[in-house]
Image 1 (cartoon, rainbow, N blue to C red):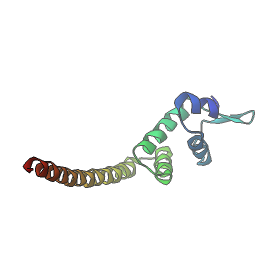
Image 2 (image 1 turned 90 degrees about the vertical axis):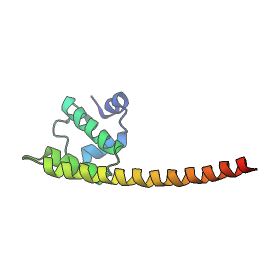
Image 3 (image 1 turned 60 degrees about the horizontal axis):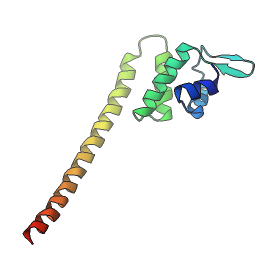
Image 4 (image 1 turned 45 degrees about the vertical axis):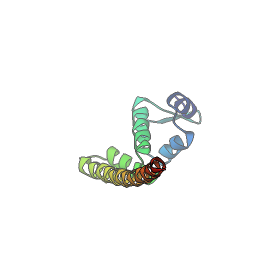
Length: 118
């Protein structure tokens, strides 16, 4: 499957596919007649990359995670630490947004209460 076929079929932006290729992590990708050919293992890796992007990883974090995943040996602890940091940041963001919603609801309550007193 070519880069364009993979992009269209799996809805992966060409930029991400080219970035993936530039990392040199696509060991199974073969270059045939001037274009990359992706196999199932590459598509699994690309699915992981898309998941990492979707959960808020930066390009540098995605590359680091994927390099850890490709390394020989046990990298589960390092990958888990990366995921835990991202999870903690997401929870912090959720808590901040909840406080904002609470304040917003309080202001709405004050306005609604003031209208009822008229």
